[in-house]
Image 1 (cartoon, rainbow, N blue to C red):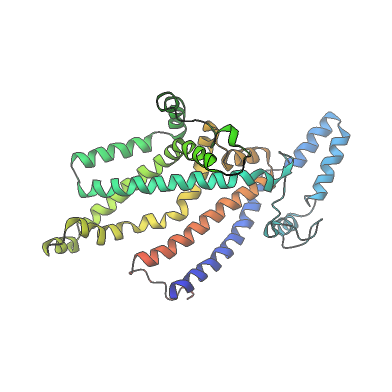
Image 2: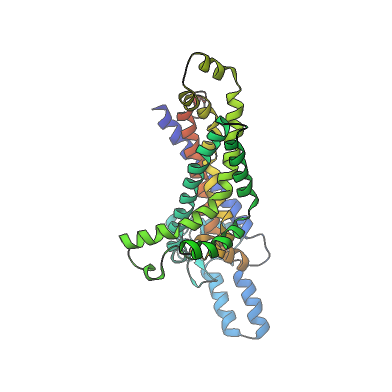
Length: 342
């Protein structure tokens, strides 16, 4: 019951934090001088295209870009009525993309779930690789197992993701006939979900998952090894061994639980950091994720599109942080949440 109260409390703080983040995101996307429409108007005026200027001016009024910034923010979020009444982010209207000349919801609709799918697969890969290798390296410290794991970890950290993507782009297809480019075969694009489409997506996920998750798995493995070695040197471990407890049971029951805390706490940062860090990989591999869209939106100052993507990444961060906080309370009895609003 108390954990439920704490979860509700964390959900409330998450909403308040998201509100603050929305202010910061709106301020950041408005930091560069001008915007997409004002830049377009300047170009059209320079070339004497009066009809285009009139259309751009109309769009400025249509999307309240002619109002003060604080009013633009309130209308964008849906806290006050704009030209079309209350129609902002909280009402499900994410705005209009001037670069793609389409509603933001239509542009990101197909890429959002693919983005989450790719990065969830990468997170699963990170934990599946880092956890056993980190524990094994610590349990077999200063042996060939430890040195081999360290070599793999340093190799993963030292290899840039885009370079690894280029290597697998060529050799993965040549040697293993792995599909490279996109997240599904071209014939399945725009087709309703079916088993053949699912199989195509799973096969196409192999290379992006490996490329995006390699660096994260390497870093987490090294940290887990260091934390485990620190715990294995403490007196309670020697006491457990002296009492005859099996090494495997002792590792799982005590040192691993304590050493694993930082990795549960990393859930909030891992997914959004992979999304932001996989932009270049998505461009190289031609993935239909939100990364290339964000890159284009930032370059062209497409404020509504870039603002939505940044808010989406922030929401993932906050949800991940809330989940990690609740899991930490369940995982470690030393963590107390009394007095935190419960």
